Length: 249
Image 1: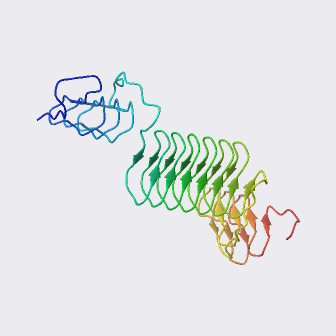
Image 2 (image 1 turned 135 degrees about the vertical axis):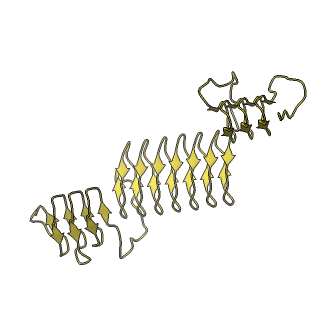
Image 3 (image 1 turned 60 degrees about the vertical axis):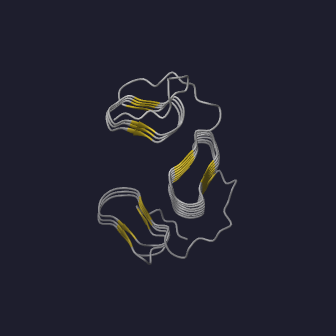
């Protein structure tokens, strides 16, 4: 069975050519493969069998070229699910979550709660109250994090700000690149540990860090301690470092 939603072919006509293929909306879409589906959008081509395109413009499934359609200068937004989400930027998308906003052109929010991607090519993957506010900036997750520099990123943690060009904050609390946007929110009394790599490392001291190595450990009592690498090192007291720097806090 082939499904074509309109009559004779016209400019912008949707067409379903493959056996049991379906086009359910949009303009200028084509379902070419057997069992292929295009749900909406403009100028999309589902070429491979049983492939599907949900929407957008000039998207293709399969090894072929897109249809000769020029995308409109407005529209193309997609909200895939969740609750009270808004995609208002050109070709922006919100995949799920609640009260998320993708207002920048080509911006995206994957999920979470109260997240905002407000600039061109900005993205927020999840978490809560995170903001990607500059060109091509991103926040992966966490809480109250802000990517405010062009090409900047925050991977996680809480109340972190990546304020400088191409800067990165990996995690923790109250960290700021650029020093221009310090957070006023208090850090939690626990947490903030970081393990960057290695194997079998355990960081349990508040705001402690292990950069690599193996079977290294920062104890609960070893807040603000750090181990750069090696094997079997154990930080048991506050501000202890391996290798030792002679500094204290």
